[in-house]
Length: 174
Image 1 (cartoon, helix red, strand yellow):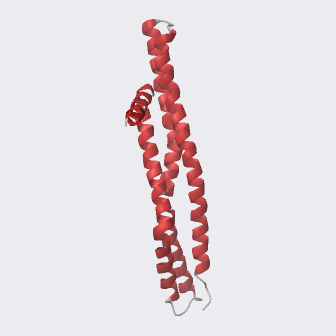
Image 2 (image 1 turned 30 degrees about the vertical axis):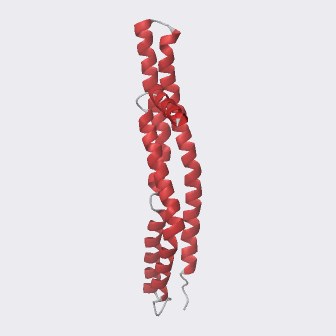
């Protein structure tokens, strides 16, 4: 159990060195990955029921060639697309926000460097904490964003594929 204490101490030290913005980046990353796992869970568990329900509604229609039938089909596809897309736009927003928070951490770290220079002159030792506070959030924001870019690319492809597949399932002729 000593290794668990060491890991906890390393995380706390890392968060302290990163300044006040690093907990925000950690929270954003946690929320982003929670939503990513929710979307993966949806496709694994719930999506089949949605497709079956929408397909059954469409198959219950006695005719599928009129203008009204086309509008009903479009409404069913639109409803399903919204559920398929789910929280993907929010995930994409989090991906875009992560490097901006990292940049904010860079600015706050540089303010600490300039403050240290004003109070202690050009002492390298006193500036090191501010430089650390400037670089760690930048790195954390970029890592969070890059991991999210990969996940959103995979999810976007899955959303597009499943939406097109659903449209193909809803045949227009009877």
